Length: 310
Length: 248
Ligand SMILES: Cc1cc2nc3c(=O)[nH]c(=O)nc-3n(C[C@H](O)[C@H](O)[C@H](O)COP(=O)(O)OP(=O)(O)OC[C@H]3O[C@@H](n4cnc5c(N)ncnc54)[C@H](O)[C@@H]3O)c2cc1C
Ligand SMILES: Nc1ncnc2c1ncn2[C@@H]1O[C@H](COP(=O)(O)O)[C@@H](O)[C@H]1O
Image (tube, rainbow over all chains, first blue to last red):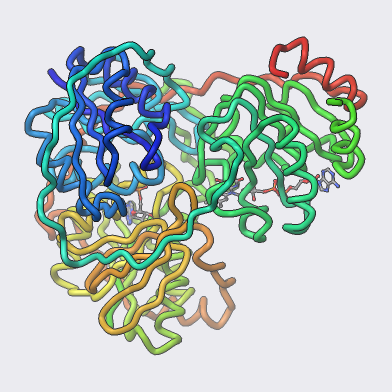
């Protein structure tokens, strides 16, 4: 039984979500290969070849793959899947976009957001915004899973896998790339950060959000996150949203500022190691998961915190 | 232009989830059920396209128990013209839902299918992409903006790191994200009107799709509980605690 892991990267750097997905795949099979797709991704492939436990790295390059068009990516992986019993994909927005296509093309279920591989055919996944955990068993020949990477440890470095080129099948005509608008930031990415400072509706405006949340994040070397309410109101970009339908994070330290703690938000951060809540309402549900709570107006609490941090 | 909108009946997003003590599932007896929020956004978007004169007919379809009729009526209240209920008491998995929707699409021949990105019960985020694959129609998931012109939908998508805009040739499948629109509230006259709109009831057998579950649910359990920690007096005390916890 061999497994194929799809690498997560930004074109230049391999994300450690790949290492975590390798760990999940190694629980299924000792023969784990990694696919790196994109354009100009040789260095990413080299980085993948150094993950311990990886047998072989496959590299597929084309302009369409660079734009991450689901039809193209899924066609490539579905073609490769004949050689594998399992395909494991990090549950990023990109992975969620194409993974179900592979499952449908192979006529198998998608095992979505897997948090534990019990054995080769049994998996645990959260349902209802993480308020319940479902253990499912499948007898299907091929397994296609997206992996909730926060639930797995990163595979170590130290491998020396061979790197092989594969060709992507011809492009689909029905979808065309028009444009993209990427948020650039010098701060760590949400998925990789050790510390996250998240702001909620309480911040009231984009100016206030930037003036309060950003300096604290910079002082801590943290990534910035947000609640849905803050994103909907335009205080923060969409990919900052933490929660059931946004990003799932599990940093060492998560600081929630002016966030009430709706279950949809908790679904995205309650596995953080240490949670801090700063909220003026002592009854706010966020305090029920917080290790440390400050019942305070952020307008005084954050400047105080900046001072106390020195 | 005809739009098909699949809508799912799910546990209302405000209801506290209770896992059954025999670990067989989540308790759905006597709790409020509603249309999946992402599907409401899909119906709203279709309705706006109709109001703009882009769409001419909206068909809402739901696969579920008899009570899923209410979910369809909610869609008819927002603006759908007619409904199809594929009635079953079985839990239908995303792949089987996609196969049923494919069969519906083959008879209804819509130009566009708009559906939710994710049903908030199973949190699969799979059916739209599967349906697009089975129909071999282009897909644009996680939409935060949709413009339809010249036989193409230009869809702005919420992706890792920002936004991406794709053009998909119709017919196509679009899945909605939260920021696509804000669904309207039901007005009394629209509720009255909805009850008079056509609603057909079908069975799974009518479509010849095998909906036997592929996954066996061994158990459904509660996640490990996090307990509330301590409330601190001030920022200085917070920093001291974070330092001794080793996270600063
Ligand atoms: C289908 C669906 C999916 C969703 N997905 C997500 C998701 O992925 N992520 C997500 O976050 N939400 C999600 N939500 C929304 C969620 O239900 C909540 O509405 C949202 O999380 C609320 O955001 P908030 O806590 O910032 O705002 P609010 O709930 O309005 O809370 C603001 C908090 O700030 C506090 N406050 C106000 N002023 C101050 C002050 N001066 N100082 C300190 N504290 C102050 C208040 O006491 C309050 O607790 C989803 C909802 C639905 C229906
Ligand atoms: N039983 C169903 N009936 C109608 N539509 C459904 C059903 N299940 C899923 N869908 C549609 O598929 C979307 C994604 O669901 P899922 O893949 O289960 O997360 C939902 O938002 C609905 O639009």
